[in-house]
Length: 139
Image 1 (cartoon, rainbow, N blue to C red):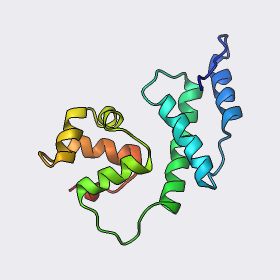
Image 2: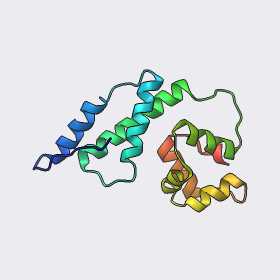
Image 3: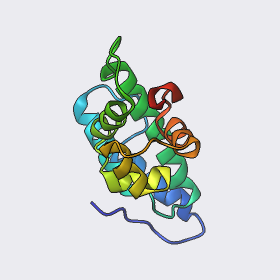
């Protein structure tokens, strides 16, 4: 679904309010709400956003990550770095290309998932900042 934005002196507020009407910023309580949040995050990621839509996206990511941490994070499971990245991609419905945009290199993601190379410090830093995970997952 395309996001309609009215253009006027309050366009940042209009974009924000359009998004709020679509999915209010409140704690995510079930998988259906989480799926809707992930869909909106996917639509907004990588786009040039005004301040209102950018603030909405930042907050929605925090809410989605909180729900995932509380409901979908395996506790006591030791994952290899590749398994951890695949689990993050799966839980967030992120493709290899989208993950490449997050860390700055699609080829690095491909090579890492094949076992041909490790992730650089800058790649790990991008993952930690975006997904709020411990860097040790990828070491």
